[in-house]
Length: 123
Image 1 (cartoon, rainbow, N blue to C red):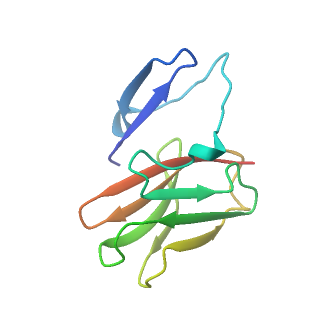
Image 2 (image 1 turned 60 degrees about the vertical axis):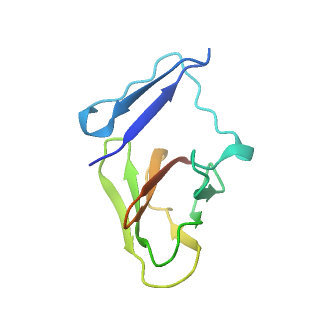
């Protein structure tokens, strides 16, 4: 497992942690908020909608099709709960997430030279 997670506090401060070092996440006195107008990752190459999602998650990326190799959905514990190796040339993918438990997840687009990650909530 590679990559980082950034935790942003309500007051605006934030800390970044390596996903490989995280064993347990506990949020106390917190509210999870998702701003629908800003549901892209920092580079803008990966979008998920609707967010929060119930049954179907739409994943859109702007990564070159020749470079994108797979899509993954990870639980906050870091376990891969969905993986799809990509062979087509479409930038929009639909994933049935109805069997996933409610909670916070990470969606990851893996390319030859990049990994883009974005979070979403399953209702």
